[in-house]
Length: 388
Image (cartoon, rainbow, N blue to C red):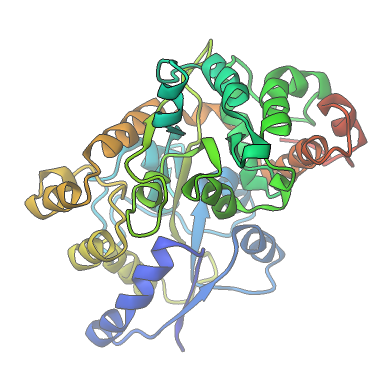
């Protein structure tokens, strides 16, 4: 029987899909790769109707997976996989650990970056944006929907992962968007993110809530939006001269709020489920995924230069690849965003997903024009029954 592995669409599944036959040939372990969207994976894992062996583990709902006994804890080194934890940034390992116990091996780490059209900002005689006030002001100054240019774009769909944009903005202003327990208080949510939601409503596209994260970023790549508030991963696409209309015209900033830098911490890894009957084979797969061959292929073939590994910068082939792609300045911004990442802005609660969906339902209602303000919209949302 094949090892059943659930992955999310993106770089990870692309490179593993290309290389996994080599793993099977060298180990004799067959692998059944399945692409499962993040929200669907959460719901199917918690229902227990399907039981994969290896799964993608985002830190946002790690507490729920641990509480429901879905995952096996990973030790300092998985027995068969031989995982060396030292090269992974502490922010990634810490976000995927609880009380010092790691539950997943990191393969993604992002911080929060403002990706912006440096040429358009300069044309206004403005300095590069560095603060949340700069973002709000420039969004309005650069907005020209009739001329085909939106000011500011960010995630607005009701997917729970969209919440990180708003949780990170709230943290920068001195607020935690979700409390440690219980339902979020409508007036507090409005005070924390009302200015961002209003800027998106006024300067963003009318169909923002129907766009997934890729479709939001594509607005910048196509030259139709000036500012993107999102993860630190977008520069690889925006600077790709074969596909991006804005390559060479962008810049990237860690934006500072009154209390902290704006966040978009996304730590994700691969974990082994509790019901996996062949944990040694699963551990071997995790070790292979971070082997030298797979890492080099991921970087060279799909351009994944922001792998969360602190040892890559010491390797000549990696430095050559950065130089070849002209991404040195951008990667320096990525590392600044990693340094600014603070997991404390997301509460460790087992009901994070329903709470996030509740808040994003309210945000989407305002962006869609179905509600006049966040306070009203959140009060109209069905209670998620928050308990922490």
